[in-house]
Amino acid sequence: MDDLNANADDLALSLALRKRLRGFFMNTRDVSQRSTWLEITRRMSPSLQTEVAVELHSAWLCSVPFLAGSSRYFIAELAQNIGTARYAQQETFGHNFRLYVMNRGLASRIVGPKDQLRLMLPGNPWGLEHLVFQSAALPADPCASSPLVPKEARSRSDQRAQQATQEFDWRTYSA
Image (tube, rainbow, N blue to C red; front, side):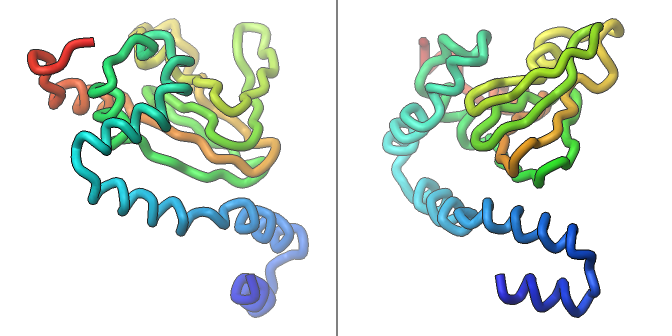
Protein backbone atom coordinates (compact mmCIF):
# COMPACT_ATOMS: atom_id res chain seq x y z
CA MET A 1 0.00 0.00 0.00
CA ASP A 2 2.95 2.30 0.67
CA ASP A 3 4.18 1.76 -2.91
CA LEU A 4 0.73 2.58 -4.27
CA ASN A 5 0.54 5.80 -2.24
CA ALA A 6 4.08 6.83 -3.21
CA ASN A 7 3.49 6.20 -6.92
CA ALA A 8 0.10 7.93 -6.86
CA ASP A 9 1.79 10.93 -5.24
CA ASP A 10 4.63 10.94 -7.82
CA LEU A 11 2.10 10.75 -10.65
CA ALA A 12 -0.04 13.50 -9.06
CA LEU A 13 -3.21 11.41 -9.27
CA SER A 14 -6.40 13.03 -8.01
CA LEU A 15 -7.53 12.31 -4.46
CA ALA A 16 -10.70 10.63 -5.75
CA LEU A 17 -8.71 8.24 -7.95
CA ARG A 18 -6.26 7.50 -5.13
CA LYS A 19 -9.18 6.59 -2.88
CA ARG A 20 -10.62 4.23 -5.53
CA LEU A 21 -7.21 2.61 -6.05
CA ARG A 22 -6.73 2.03 -2.32
CA GLY A 23 -10.24 0.59 -2.04
CA PHE A 24 -9.62 -1.77 -4.95
CA PHE A 25 -6.32 -3.08 -3.61
CA MET A 26 -7.64 -3.40 -0.06
CA ASN A 27 -10.38 -5.68 -1.42
CA THR A 28 -7.99 -7.80 -3.50
CA ARG A 29 -5.50 -8.70 -0.79
CA ASP A 30 -6.17 -12.39 -1.22
CA VAL A 31 -4.82 -12.53 -4.80
CA SER A 32 -1.49 -14.09 -3.81
CA GLN A 33 -3.26 -16.59 -1.56
CA ARG A 34 -5.48 -17.63 -4.48
CA SER A 35 -2.46 -17.94 -6.78
CA THR A 36 -0.80 -20.22 -4.25
CA TRP A 37 -3.98 -22.31 -4.00
CA LEU A 38 -4.12 -22.70 -7.80
CA GLU A 39 -0.53 -23.93 -7.81
CA ILE A 40 -1.31 -26.41 -5.02
CA THR A 41 -4.32 -27.79 -6.92
CA ARG A 42 -2.22 -28.24 -10.07
CA ARG A 43 0.11 -30.52 -8.10
CA MET A 44 -2.76 -32.70 -6.80
CA SER A 45 -3.63 -36.06 -8.26
CA PRO A 46 -6.54 -36.04 -10.75
CA SER A 47 -8.78 -37.71 -8.18
CA LEU A 48 -8.06 -35.07 -5.53
CA GLN A 49 -8.48 -32.29 -8.10
CA THR A 50 -11.93 -33.68 -8.90
CA GLU A 51 -12.96 -33.90 -5.24
CA VAL A 52 -11.76 -30.36 -4.53
CA ALA A 53 -13.44 -28.95 -7.66
CA VAL A 54 -16.76 -30.59 -6.80
CA GLU A 55 -16.67 -29.27 -3.26
CA LEU A 56 -15.69 -25.74 -4.31
CA HIS A 57 -17.83 -25.29 -7.42
CA SER A 58 -20.90 -27.53 -7.22
CA ALA A 59 -22.88 -25.01 -5.11
CA TRP A 60 -22.73 -22.19 -7.65
CA LEU A 61 -22.94 -24.56 -10.63
CA CYS A 62 -26.35 -25.64 -9.34
CA SER A 63 -27.53 -22.05 -9.87
CA VAL A 64 -26.87 -22.47 -13.61
CA PRO A 65 -29.88 -24.51 -14.80
CA PHE A 66 -28.19 -26.40 -17.63
CA LEU A 67 -25.17 -27.31 -15.46
CA ALA A 68 -27.11 -28.33 -12.33
CA GLY A 69 -27.07 -32.06 -13.08
CA SER A 70 -23.47 -32.25 -14.28
CA SER A 71 -21.28 -35.15 -13.28
CA ARG A 72 -18.45 -34.56 -10.84
CA TYR A 73 -15.92 -35.17 -13.61
CA PHE A 74 -17.48 -32.53 -15.83
CA ILE A 75 -17.48 -30.07 -12.90
CA ALA A 76 -13.76 -30.76 -12.43
CA GLU A 77 -13.14 -30.15 -16.15
CA LEU A 78 -15.04 -26.85 -16.03
CA ALA A 79 -13.28 -25.78 -12.83
CA GLN A 80 -9.89 -25.99 -14.53
CA ASN A 81 -11.02 -23.43 -17.11
CA ILE A 82 -12.78 -20.91 -14.89
CA GLY A 83 -11.31 -17.44 -14.88
CA THR A 84 -11.60 -15.01 -11.99
CA ALA A 85 -11.63 -11.26 -12.49
CA ARG A 86 -11.79 -8.42 -10.02
CA TYR A 87 -13.54 -5.15 -10.74
CA ALA A 88 -13.46 -1.78 -9.00
CA GLN A 89 -16.51 0.09 -7.81
CA GLN A 90 -18.42 1.82 -10.64
CA GLU A 91 -16.43 -0.07 -13.30
CA THR A 92 -18.61 -1.40 -16.12
CA PHE A 93 -17.75 -4.83 -17.46
CA GLY A 94 -19.31 -7.74 -19.30
CA HIS A 95 -19.09 -9.44 -22.68
CA ASN A 96 -21.59 -11.38 -24.71
CA PHE A 97 -21.24 -15.16 -25.00
CA ARG A 98 -19.71 -15.36 -21.53
CA LEU A 99 -21.21 -16.84 -18.40
CA TYR A 100 -20.62 -14.82 -15.23
CA VAL A 101 -21.23 -15.91 -11.66
CA MET A 102 -20.82 -13.43 -8.82
CA ASN A 103 -18.25 -14.78 -6.40
CA ARG A 104 -17.85 -11.89 -3.97
CA GLY A 105 -19.27 -8.40 -3.70
CA LEU A 106 -22.40 -6.81 -5.11
CA ALA A 107 -23.18 -5.49 -8.60
CA SER A 108 -26.13 -4.10 -10.51
CA ARG A 109 -27.23 -4.59 -14.07
CA ILE A 110 -30.04 -3.28 -16.24
CA VAL A 111 -32.24 -6.05 -17.67
CA GLY A 112 -35.42 -6.49 -19.64
CA PRO A 113 -37.31 -4.33 -22.08
CA LYS A 114 -38.23 -1.88 -19.30
CA ASP A 115 -34.61 -1.43 -18.15
CA GLN A 116 -35.17 -2.82 -14.68
CA LEU A 117 -32.31 -2.71 -12.18
CA ARG A 118 -31.24 -6.13 -10.90
CA LEU A 119 -28.83 -6.67 -8.02
CA MET A 120 -26.30 -9.44 -8.51
CA LEU A 121 -25.41 -11.22 -5.27
CA PRO A 122 -22.78 -13.92 -4.67
CA GLY A 123 -23.86 -17.08 -6.50
CA ASN A 124 -26.01 -15.23 -9.08
CA PRO A 125 -25.28 -16.21 -12.70
CA TRP A 126 -25.85 -14.02 -15.75
CA GLY A 127 -25.09 -14.25 -19.46
CA LEU A 128 -26.95 -17.57 -19.72
CA GLU A 129 -29.11 -16.43 -22.62
CA HIS A 130 -26.13 -15.98 -24.91
CA LEU A 131 -24.67 -19.38 -24.09
CA VAL A 132 -27.94 -21.20 -24.69
CA PHE A 133 -29.63 -19.22 -27.47
CA GLN A 134 -28.31 -17.67 -30.64
CA SER A 135 -30.83 -15.13 -31.86
CA ALA A 136 -30.75 -11.67 -33.41
CA ALA A 137 -33.47 -10.71 -30.92
CA LEU A 138 -31.06 -10.88 -27.98
CA PRO A 139 -30.04 -7.52 -26.50
CA ALA A 140 -26.75 -6.12 -27.80
CA ASP A 141 -25.04 -5.96 -24.40
CA PRO A 142 -26.99 -8.00 -21.85
CA CYS A 143 -23.94 -8.81 -19.76
CA ALA A 144 -22.86 -5.28 -18.85
CA SER A 145 -22.66 -4.88 -15.10
CA SER A 146 -21.49 -2.21 -12.67
CA PRO A 147 -20.07 -3.12 -9.26
CA LEU A 148 -21.66 -1.34 -6.32
CA VAL A 149 -18.84 -2.53 -4.09
CA PRO A 150 -15.49 -3.94 -5.22
CA LYS A 151 -16.24 -7.44 -6.43
CA GLU A 152 -15.00 -10.59 -7.99
CA ALA A 153 -16.74 -12.62 -10.67
CA ARG A 154 -16.02 -15.98 -12.20
CA SER A 155 -16.50 -16.28 -15.93
CA ARG A 156 -16.47 -18.81 -18.72
CA SER A 157 -16.49 -17.87 -22.35
CA ASP A 158 -18.59 -19.81 -24.84
CA GLN A 159 -15.41 -20.84 -26.66
CA ARG A 160 -13.77 -22.19 -23.48
CA ALA A 161 -16.98 -24.03 -22.55
CA GLN A 162 -17.12 -25.66 -25.98
CA GLN A 163 -13.46 -26.62 -25.70
CA ALA A 164 -14.02 -28.21 -22.27
CA THR A 165 -17.03 -30.18 -23.52
CA GLN A 166 -15.20 -31.32 -26.65
CA GLU A 167 -12.17 -32.47 -24.65
CA PHE A 168 -14.32 -34.25 -22.08
CA ASP A 169 -14.55 -37.99 -22.73
CA TRP A 170 -18.29 -38.63 -22.44
CA ARG A 171 -17.91 -42.40 -22.95
CA THR A 172 -15.74 -42.81 -19.85
CA TYR A 173 -17.83 -40.82 -17.40
CA SER A 174 -21.57 -40.65 -17.00
CA ALA A 175 -23.68 -38.52 -14.70
